[in-house]
Length: 510
Image (cartoon, rainbow, N blue to C red; front, top):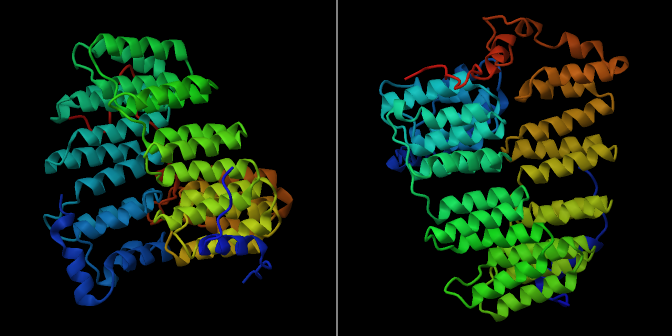
């Protein structure tokens, strides 16, 4: 077993678990945004983000105009990447930026971020409008269509996914092996591996598959899980002269571990050590993680130590797996010791590292310790969406709404845009406690459809304060065209999918 270290970082983490609970109180290389920052003394990206967070509904464009900040393409790209979960709010900024000056052109990365954001809220009409704009700008590429295929597949729109691939030629982008792999990957990751296999069998003579193509199918069948079919695809791969690479082996090891065939997985890893393809830290992390899930903590530690003996330098992924193994065994002191060991070796813990610990503490109902870890975490690294969502949910479920709202306000202070999941967790927590007057304003700032609120209104009719209803912009519910709110019914009506035909047509056909 790994002994807890006594480094300064370990002491830091041990102190975390023992102290008294605190009180609750392209074109981006142009450098234009950097020049603006040096001249004005203010980061233009941060300033624009603050404006968007402070007035997300009416008056956004006027506030942006009045700011005096020019959203150069590199700046606009940064803003859009930060607001990837903001839906129509992000689109309004995108549209405002390109109307600033004649000849303005967004970067390809900004277009892709906006396309993905619109697809998340099923604004497919606007999404295809952007594709048409990219074509006019000469900015379309294979990745554009791969982004769209992934989003359609994630929404379980298989026909639209296939159509997006088929229509590439008409948009002047020739489908290649990368696009073919993008189509297969989109289908496999959305649990449509049988359809992916059907497409592969139909098109493999058109595109010569390589190891990467076969690896996509192997991963799909491994997730199914269907090991016999996975072995069949692997054998076909070898028969066609495709040598498995490190990614292929990683997929096979992962599939065997998930199927509970640990001995076979270990044999594959040991066989790799004798080939020209030695195992990577990721592959060891799969073994360590699986041992942790099975509560075989000694095997997890032995695997980690074996990796080091074999000369494989651990990275943050395998350390996270070891932290998770100790947490699943409720050995939190050892988990903190691993965090100390990471920093001693120059590996900085990331949000995922702390999320593993937080999730385990919350599951074990050790809420005060979880909050202390969160307080320490924000001094070490930036929390992510999962971190904030976990903490808000924990406080809501333990009847500490004020603390949940404190976390929410901290997110705003850090200019961290909440995901729709974070919004829904807080709104749900407030509604469950009858706090409709506090939930309603949050709904107006989110990208959640109004049907979300209607569900809670039907569940909690006795606790609805009349002020909550009267303060809502009722005119926008009736599709008032003069309203600048993106949450009008006319906006919601655009969220319908592309018409379902054998091959559904996008809004704007080439």
